[in-house]
Image (tube, rainbow, N blue to C red; front, side, top):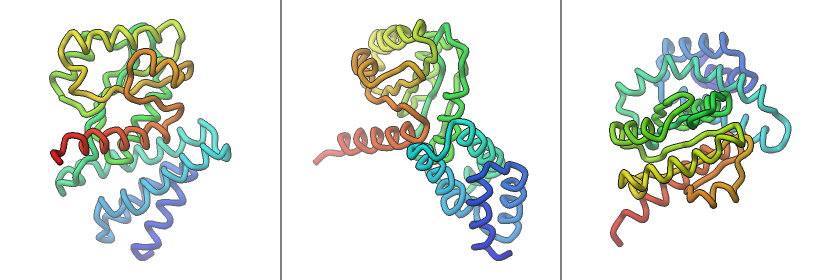
Amino acid sequence: MNGQDILKALYDETLVGNAPRVLELTAQGLESGLGPDALLFEALIPSLEEVGARFERGDFFVPEMLIAGRAMSGALDVLRPLLADTGAETVGTFLMGTVKGDVHDIGKNLVNIMLEGAGFQVIDLGVQVSPEKFIAAIEEHQPDIVGFSAFLTTTMPMFKANMNALEKAGLRDKVIVMVGGAPVTQEYADAVGADGYAADASTAVRRAKDLIARKRAAAVPA
């Protein structure tokens, strides 16, 4: 197999979520002299973007997205240290956590995989994350975006508690805030004062990129 064949196969096998084959092809690509950035930007990311597009069209469902995401995650574990060595630029830093009182993380984890695949550095605080823990992590990591995830309607009020904590700590203007989760709507995101909302993982990545680009453009003096 030449380089183009490996990239094509890696794209196809990621699309169907064949994790062992994706790992095999990643190793094969590196052995054949393909750079980690080529594997990521010419095969893995385009494949995951296609997964997202199929999900939006209703051709794929959450299980297919999870399977493809996990397959890509295995390849990312191999490529991440190599990409760091090449000094590949990250899109931005995304700090993520499921709010206090909530232990659901499948949706959050899928968004994390998609964000990493798109070139974000993701810091995952896990589940049951208190406002205090979010604040401490923001001060430590200084992320571009903070993501609050909630699966239960009973834990959605924590979004507002987290926003209040950001205001109190003087951090609200320093970070972009995104919210999401099964019961969350655009209206609710607006009501709590979030900057962005996404109904699914592929939209979350697009929205995150858009929000960062806008913030950076606004920061550049005319």
